[in-house]
Image 1 (tube, helix red, strand yellow):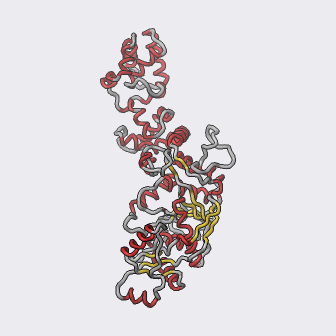
Image 2 (cartoon, rainbow, N blue to C red):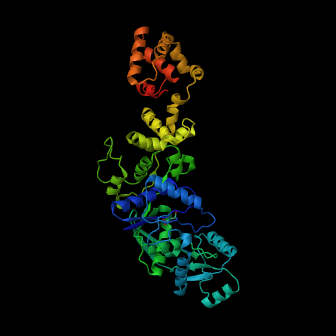
Image 3 (spheres, helix red, strand yellow):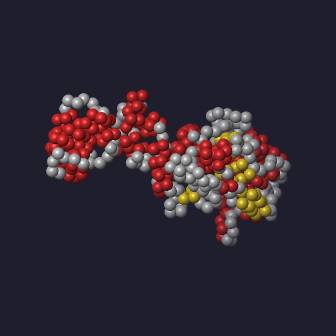
Length: 475
Ligand code: GLU
């Protein structure tokens, strides 16, 4: 079994597309198949190498590695469409020779006028077939005189195109609504439908799993497979990912690209686990961690994934549920791994000068104080601000701290604490407990009346992590 993810490098990787990549990856990994990556960069105006690099980086960050692709090569390369133009040209010639395709010289103005006439007459616009009857000789003469035609595919007039979609069941399109479509532009570059069929066939892709937005392209692609003498692949069209208001997930809803989720401090395993469950639920229960059937490591998901189990109702992106999963994976992650993912948030705040071994060690030491009370890694430095930015005057100006300090006996506690700590050097957990015990004895305060002033004195904040954990990290 061979599947592919075929991004167009025209921007950042959208989470909806990341989910498409993930379903392909899961399907390949669970079935011992091959997952290949193909870059669809024939739109020269909109495609960039920066976008390609960022998409590859995001996929790697998610852990969705590929067996064949532009960077790793493989037996069916090249894997960038811009490097396969010779192949499209040769198959276009084959279609022309077999009368499956013809040159079209219609000007944009003429096409637009036809379109307007169709709309005015109340039917969907469709190419009028003006250049269909042109002989090859006449077409060649016009090309020789300098005209630059497109190449159109000759769509059979009345035929039903059927396919068994693995997600949606039987799908039927009548060719009556499909006009002769362009397969090669006047500058010689292939159109999407044509390039994708040549590539999927030559790369021996057995299952095309992609977004539902491509479903109306599929009958055109099946016609191309037939005309080129290739056996069509199987198809699975995934429903779109919608925002909570049931419109396609967009900037209005918050983060939409993998890069943004990463920048906000979601862990890749949380995003992967969450994305897989948009539209898919594993058939038999039994997850891991907290025994929640939805918390599934990626290998377990791959083992249980079946494309037939993916639903066709649109998936609603639930930011709360993602946050819940992120909390789970943050707590489950080893401190060193968490430090590797979160040290950038400390350097961004200037709390840690740079990513050094020492910084990593310190960050992994202090992280456990915060992970239990945040949704995202990005929030951690703020929770631990007291370790890096202690400002007594600013602290006293906040109402919560002032309230603690105005309580009867609070100042005595702080003074006794200062006295106890004056000569005691660096505090570990036991030394701190002993010092707090002596303050208790000296002042007669206990419980909140003891620990609130101590917290305020040491951290400048009225709330925060357990003091036992926090104190050893205070320099
Ligand atoms: N390049 C297309 C896209 O990004 C791929 C469509 C397909 O998978 O066939 O939408």
